[in-house]
Length: 170
Image 1 (tube, rainbow, N blue to C red):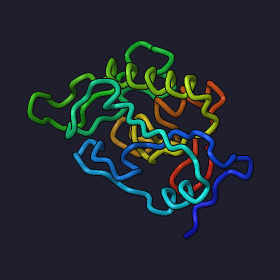
Image 2: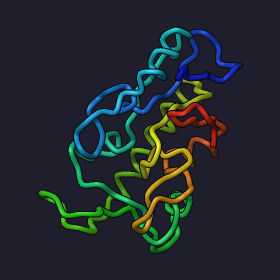
Image 3: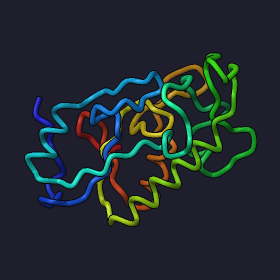
């Protein structure tokens, strides 16, 4: 499969890319998930890639327990709706099940928003299903839901187009 970039993306343009999609070991499980087609397309187009990981930027370690939205959807977290939090799904060293990661996720989202503003970014390419970076889907209340992640919601509100690994916008 050849990754199709947006038709108005300019050669040399700065874009945000999930660090894990570049193969960096930033995922919750300590692994990367390189999207080789995306990497090749961005390189061929001579884009300036800015790797981002909202969870790492927010101060979370790698590895870390998986987390999901509890009591709502990512937009509710972004809007600080009462009772909607991002919590760990399982217990892990230093984190009991249900540990609240909301503050770190919000801090990381703010850092990515600042990076986007600083560099005049119009496009971001994010991994699917993350509570931060999911474009079409994320984890909430024990299931996979059709909603973007927290950082994706914030970037979209700023006018940044966020694309998933399959090259489609949400």
